[in-house]
Image (cartoon, rainbow, N blue to C red):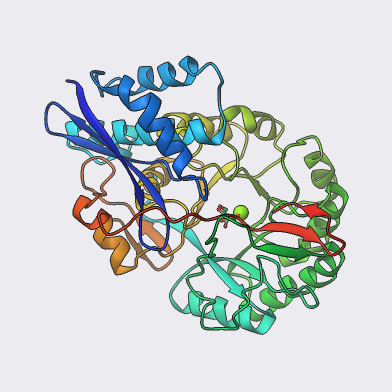
Length: 408
Ligand code: CS2
Ligand code: MG
């Protein structure tokens, strides 16, 4: 069996998805997602210019060898662009493997460990009352867990704030349009004065059962993060995410020494080497990598197994930047992983998105039920794809009030 061709598509409804389709000489094809949010053309170029010419003629069943060939063969290892490109190839090869075996992927991993995998939605509000409305809407729909982000009084433009009051606060998809980044202003002191009480009020309003998550988006210093993690202990968060930038991993010890609030980190990591220390030293409770830019199923499965040895559960990144292809790959891992924690899940299910990526994965009462179709269980409609092309975008850049650049 040989890979006969491969194509890359960039574009999609309201979002640039980087979709890889690998064809074989036996007519079976596989799909992968190489979307790297706001840098989409780069993994696409890596695939087109370097990887696809090498892929043609390879045996698609040797997914491990192909992964090693590209990873070691690159010489310059890791990095989100390369790992997103390898990840897309890897997903597509697993998709082919599942179709050959006539089995859904979770069966190849070891079968189902659960019937439905718990997901969390993004509730956002321009202010606390607005956020409460957003949470209520998700709770009414049956979600068991919500991430809560809120506008901070006196801080007009942080990514937590939805500038449009109501209306736009559900199904939150941040608009990053344009190559010039939007500037947001951040003030740590205002945030730290507001957030612990806001989280306590949410717990008070929604009671003990709701799982409440909050994303700090790398904004705090280690000491400030320890202060916040300690202050929110009575609220019993499901997790506190990215409290500090994770380049310096020693600082996580400071947070641990001061608080028992569960910590989730890893959405910007792209290899096991970015998180092995955090996992082995048990400095985090949830690992947030995504199959998209952490090298695909082959590599992420290794991270999941390492995490399982150290009481660390999964909480894969699932922002709208991921296409339904990588979300399907994660649905299969979530069905299998003995140390599954939760899945971030944003309702992509617009009619346009469903038409482009038809699948039978379904969300019901806050749980994702994985499809039983062979392989990834998601398809890609090339005719639909012709409607879209690449739209440049950029993440916001954050500055302090005096102009100092801060962390997004
Ligand atoms: C966030 C993301 O989903 C999350 O937890 O941190 O919304 C993040 O802003 C985007 O993925 C950036 O591309
Ligand atoms: Mg995050």
